[in-house]
Length: 177
Length: 251
Image 1 (tube, rainbow over the protein chains, first blue to last red):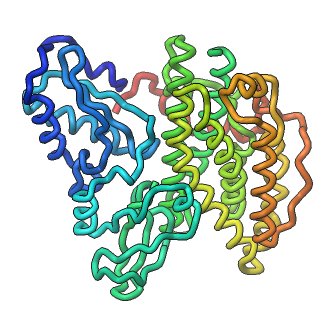
Image 2 (image 1 turned 180 degrees about the vertical axis):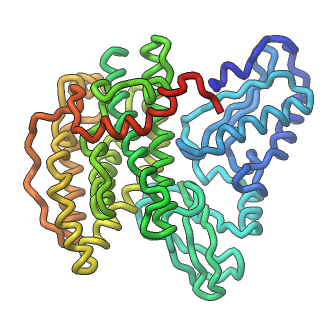
Image 3 (image 1 turned 180 degrees about the horizontal axis):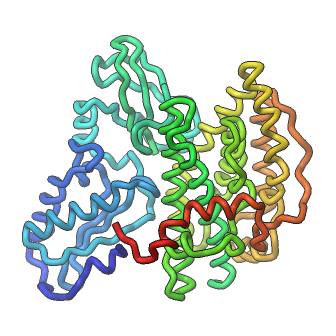
């Protein structure tokens, strides 16, 4: 469904109140990425802006990957959470530029990824790290740096598959992009 | 500038879509689970990129057709994808060779488009370039691993090259439409893209101990005019069956 059709009417338009945006950020920090359910959409860095537009809250989102199938689910989850908190007909705007990068995952997000068993992206997403040698990735289970790449692509487009050579556990690594 | 832009967006979008659809044919058939995941993830990236390009084309054309309509309701003569990507998958060597030859070209094209004077194109390309960097890294590693691998894998690669090589001619030449867009600062220099492609392919073939064939020559097929090989019609028949048989189906 085109985003424009999510807006069925202008009913419920009102002026911005001083605590609206703070409240909305807090709500979005409770909306989890469906594929990494310990990471909120704010920690993931895909909420680029919150503003008030023509009497409604507008959320500016950037997708992680062009073909990420979670994008629509995330948009629905965000709308539901905001509507449940009293924001009438929140608007969603997709923004491709600047392109999402793993550098935008917050520090708390990185810690949650690690605790969940997914190694957090290492280093910054410069082109050298995309084309060059594989980064040093530590096992999220035993913290060993003695790991090896099994596949460039893991269970989702955003992850690669690694194996720990010490504890022998396979694990996902959130790729730099 | 809209009129020449629309057919160019169809070329980009259709190539990504058809390559993505070919990769999806491997679902359930890949040689190993990890490869299956990789093939599907690359395909997913490409289908997402196709949607971005075709949505832009649909907005510019503004004739009531959306991106889904462009993908599911056009016949093969209206498709503008590269001949290379519509070729059958063959064995894993043919699949990876097609992927590599396409990725090496795609990477160069996107790198230039991410500097485009058209901000929408710039945004889509910058996003796609990050994804395609991983695609190229993986496919070039496979070419080296298969070419410089076992006797069997080397023979398979040798057999794959003549099956797809002649279709690379479209990666090397350009037409008046592309020249015009290049001069307007919308797309990269087609000659620079072709030269960089040839350099990358030569380097990867050398480290894969594979012989580099001479540059392919033009022949009667021409995807820019919608003159495709017989394989595209069969691919579209499968891909378009459901929306054509049940035009208003939703789920």
